Length: 167
Image (cartoon, rainbow, N blue to C red; front, side):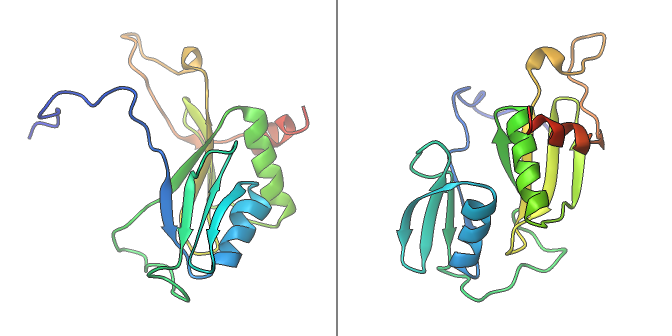
């Protein structure tokens, strides 16, 4: 089976603009995304939906209760979103995110160094998987002798990341 694009590659300027997450309790979700992670509330539609972002963008994350008010997370072993990845611009910014989680008593599910990036894994209050990460500069990416990127998974240096928050 060929995995190449049927119609040629996608435009290189395409990116992921925003994600909408189903939540059971809008206020609880806002307490996490705004109160802990520091996103800013851009717009709210009563107890039905809210739109949050970084840097004044219209929204990076939509939170809604349209089909999920009072609901429970999907059971393990079912299809759906594995996680949303939130990219931080620097190791210091990722360190600040880790500091916020630690000070809020929020546990990580894991933390990995992938060579090209460092990532923190956790779940939001509704059980949605969240990855908080930062990319290393491309010139630091591990490569083989042919120049191909060689990602890996090793434990992240949490203390080193946390120490960057103070610098």
